[in-house]
Length: 87
Image: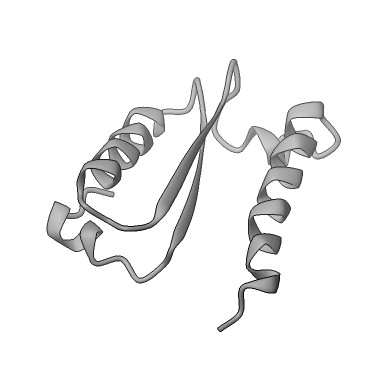
């Protein structure tokens, strides 16, 4: 997850949603990716969602947990935004 800024600026999508878990070993990498994307000149919108006091794949270990449900709802809402924007 360390593409060049030039590559990020040419991404073909218009929106991106990045989830991170505070205690995940990939959190720093994901946050750096988010910052790099914001600085790249990419014309899309990006949102970073951090789940505090959680670890990698927490949402799969407790499917009915409050944070897992909120995460799922956020993801579904993100996907549904394109429902009415089909070209």
